[in-house]
Each structure stands twice: as C-alpha cells, then as structure tokens.
Length: 239
Image 1 (cartoon, one colour):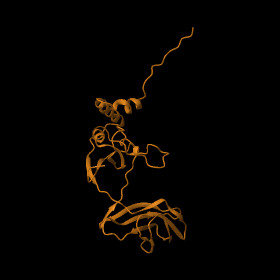
Image 2 (image 1 turned 90 degrees about the horizontal axis):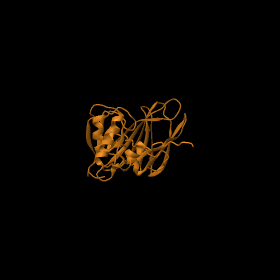
Image 3 (image 1 turned 135 degrees about the horizontal axis):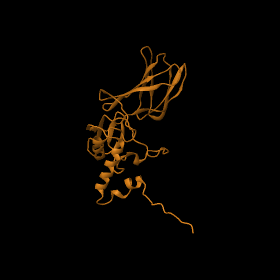
Image 4 (image 1 turned 45 degrees about the vertical axis):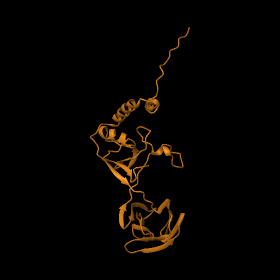
C-alpha cells in the first residue's frame, strides 16, 4: 500500500494581511498587522509630518507626451495641450520667437532652433486671476531632444515651482487611471493623502503614515530614505 502525506494548507501572507481582517471588531488585528508589516521596511527615527492645504488650481496648458514631434539642426516642433488661447515663446539670451495659439489638446508649433543649450519655453495667458504663465526650462544637447529641467507657473503674480506627486500604479497595463491608485499602499482601505519627500510618492493615508513615521525611514513604495511627510488637506477639508 502506498502512503500519502498531506501538506498543511497555509494562507498566503497577502490574504491574511489584506483579506478579511477588516471585518467587524478586528480593527485591532489590522493595526497589529500594519505595525508588523512596517517593521519589515526597517526601523528609523521618527519622521516629521506636517499638513499642507491643497488649493484647487487649474493650469491651462501642459506639454504633451512626447513634447517634441521633431528636432533637427534647423527647427523644433513642440506639442502641447491648452484650454485657453494665448501666446507661446521660445527664448534664450540671444533668441526670441513668439506664436499665438488657440485652445486644443493636440496643438503644435514650429520654431527655429536656437543655438544655445538652454532654452525657455513660455506660455502666457490674459487672465485676471489664476495661472497667467507657465514657463519650462529645457536643457538641449548637441544631438537629441530637449529635456525639461525646470517647470514653473505664475499664479496671481507669484511664481511657483511645479513639483509633481507620484501615485503607485497598481495596474501597469491600465491606460486610464484607476480609482484604486489613490488607495493607501499599507492598509489598502483609506485614500492616500500623505506624500513622502524627497521621492514624492503619495501612497499612505494619515493614520498609516503616523505609524510609519515612528517605525520606518524608507518609502513603502520605492524604499528611498524619507526625510519628511506632508499631508495634503483640501481647503474645504473634503475630498
């Protein structure tokens, strides 16, 4: 007679961690699981957390992807999207060229290629309030396409640097953004509202970030050393 041996069935970690532990009175279990999970990222000193009010801001122009349809020794074609009409300018210390444009999602303008390695590409709008200009600074090599090295907007007369916030993509093959991309990477329940600096990944809710700040110094998404956490709070305190 042959003998058969049973292998004990063990729930995978992700099931026990992300599964039914959120039900009823099991919140304490969830907190303990999160604490244990955070410990795996590494122990660190307490990271400061501050709140920053997030003012709703509509920027009426952006470079498309790709931003440059062509770029040779004589000319460059820049692709952009705009919701308002305005004026676009490419300039250097010795070169200036302007073109007017109308609203459109697939606009493009052709400019004579400047000789310098650093260009300024500016979009200007006639508005009473809000964003009146967006100014890109480009670094250009002798061959190849320009690279954006600085991005600024002028809002009500004040110039601010545009710093992008990154959200983890849960589905790398998705074409359209998924609502789940806004979910906290740790508890997988609450909306992610806290940004880790300097990597700028928005991947935690406030509650999980408080625990994270006391037990880890690595971003839970990319493991970059975190120096500060910022919670973005809308001015009306609602999402």
